[in-house]
Length: 434
Ligand code: UDX
Image 1 (cartoon, rainbow, N blue to C red):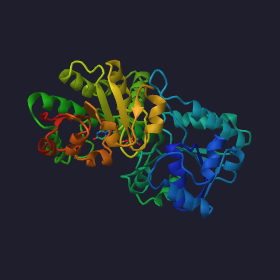
Image 2 (image 1 turned 45 degrees about the horizontal axis):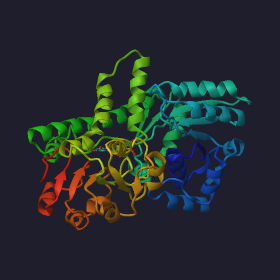
Image 3 (image 1 turned 60 degrees about the horizontal axis):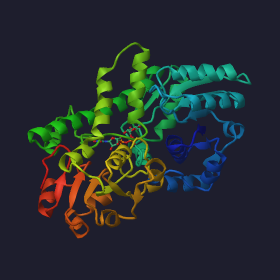
Image 4 (image 1 turned 180 degrees about the horizontal axis):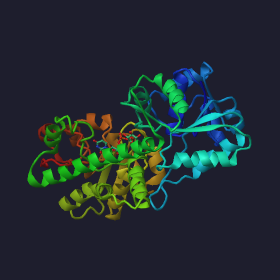
């Protein structure tokens, strides 16, 4: 099948590469010429496991092309995926500027009938709007069908998820579009759910909202467990054994971040407002997450009233491991708060330092490894559970710090290991070890 994918961000690029890998002829379109030149060379601008290998392979065998020219990119294509960004507007709703621009460019350059598939996360009803908008601006009379195909990819494991996810959702009010997309997607070998257009749009928001709720819920249980002397590891294990609850996504910590959960939870609240339907559960999920980001610094300040002039090592900056993404990373507010209280910060992250430099205060200095970051530090704060940080034995901190005190915002170490190491260890939802 001849396919174009518009937008080569993390969703668009992974989608384009994987569609080519299952045998389609794919052209990815992006208006950023410089980026297109890089992509043509097989270089991925994002850190995503396995992506570069698949890109190289499919560029080489001619299945994958890149262009910044819409006319060239749309020529002879039967299916066009829209995978541009939908960032958050000031009022929390999704900003459709890039979607609108993509629609205009599609309309001006379409020569043949197509199925437009929306990958971007868009408010319920947007797909109907996309169809109308393209039809309004068309230069040539062609037939347009519309479908929604939301993505459920996790950053860092997006390629793996494409081939190993739980389901593929395709929504359309057109039988032919549903059939064709089902055929294309069969190549991924996952269960396919076909729905109407609006339900598919809603599934994406509802999935992310539910997962965000699960995290805020376990964090609330963790905070209470700590107060009453329970251990959240055991509580999570105990509730997760109930299949109705499930054991995944029950890791307590300093809250969710990234490009999806914060944006999509606020967007669905905004959709609720527009539909005149308040969403108190999700409003509280968002508030609880904001508060959770402060929890580690609050713990530090409760234990050590004055951190002015104290040297603090911050380990892990990305919003989660295996990504260099700093969007909505808890490390942003944590470092700001520490600096407000006069701390001196040395930070380390295995891959996110370049991006961190763009968003963190210029007062933060960066280390090239864990050892360098903690050398001579008074306190250590762990903010991302990178394997490298989890593997670094607690007793090793003693070689670099006069009196190792660790505040672990991601519960990277077991309490047994903490006890055996002899370091002072504070974590989330578990008793402190002193
Ligand atoms: C998420 C969804 O998983 C994916 O389906 C959707 O398409 C996009 O949003 P992503 O943002 O890449 O993917 O990351 P994910 O691995 O889901 O983690 C999101 C955030 O939740 C991270 O900040 C992570 O640290 C946090 N988290 C996750 C927890 O705090 N506890 C958990 O148990 C799981």
